[in-house]
Length: 265
Image 1: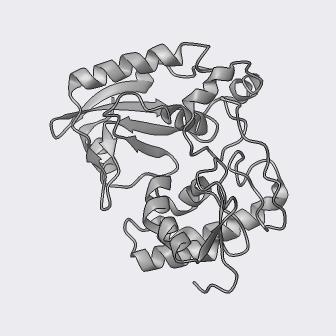
Image 2: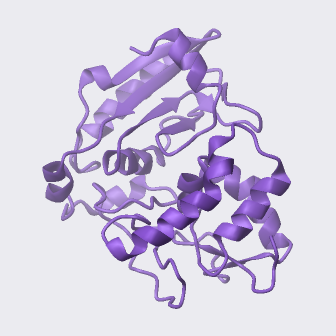
């Protein structure tokens, strides 16, 4: 059970690689399962249903205890349905109901899956699990919901990872490149708030000479993909400073962004 002080501290910071908020006012979000898979296949993380990301800080979405009880029932029913989810790695203590400032929140703590749990599910035959994914796919490999897109045919980038694979897993030769990106992103990642000009300058440096997805940028900058995409990437694309990997399909699952040649951060 999350302590009130801990929940207060969580709600004082933005989403990151181990924290994700979902308002869930319209029911159980389909994108929840993508996050569940991403957390399970990396270091784990916590989902907060009934919380929405804001410009300055997260806030509760106004759910009642009855709303959250319904969400919890739907969550367990889907999680235990092998036709929907290929692996349930949670126990009852991983899911709890909290209250914050009078609003109810469903807290789902997803542990890191064991190697056997990850490998045993990569050949799942359940085709309809693809309906559980949102348009923004995870960068993490060995997904427990193995319906990733094929690798991108684009060549020539110095960091050529598709959104269906982790930017720093599998191929050791890419580790130095990822570490270099982490050094560029470190000042923004460590800051609770960043001026838009600083954030956008950092994005242009990160995307110099390579396509990066929103999930990869989210992991580097410790901000939510939605926050980065809507507040920073979209304006840079509109200004002609970032180009799309798939310009004819803006909402492509593996969409990547690269700094336009000649653009200065």
